[in-house]
Length: 209
Image (cartoon, rainbow, N blue to C red; front, top):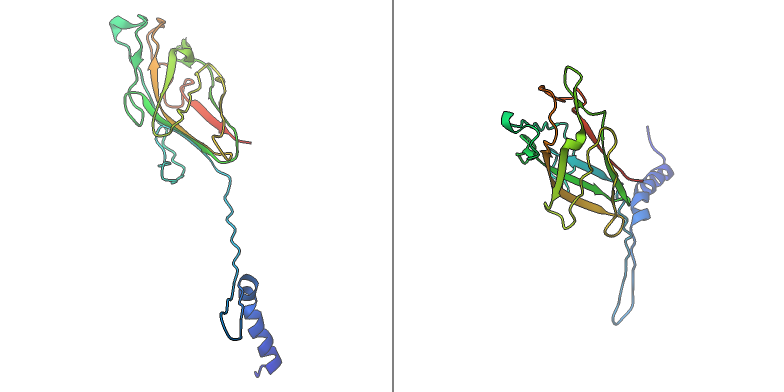
């Protein structure tokens, strides 16, 4: 089928429309010094981002933010002759070992709040319990200038840590969180908590408006 010349011209012009909408040309003629200008407009759209890491997780210092589903377990085992003597017990496990976890919060939408929530006190199979106040968290410097504070664990919701943006609505804080068992009580023998059992799991939640 033959396409009329007018239709061909219209199709050709339509193909050029995207270029005409985003580019510019300028022709100058005459003698002497000539100057021609062309303009380009640029825009960058940044999505809102909220990143939380406690323990194993993706690299974040290079801007590689991905979700990692690995959940760490930290265990404590006081020696038989030292139960309840008030000497803190170091943990086993954590991505940095020795009960130490990498913790990081990154966001670009303003103030961020951070809390930790447990379902209740740690329990054993017999129904005995150990309060979460027996597990302490100490925050130490990692890679950022501001150390990310750690919520104080409780048999429910912890205190709220408020992270204020340093500049331009951006928060970038990390820390090394060291978990220890305070060992100031003498509970019945048994295993308290565990892998998502007997209230052994704590959920950390970062929220950004």
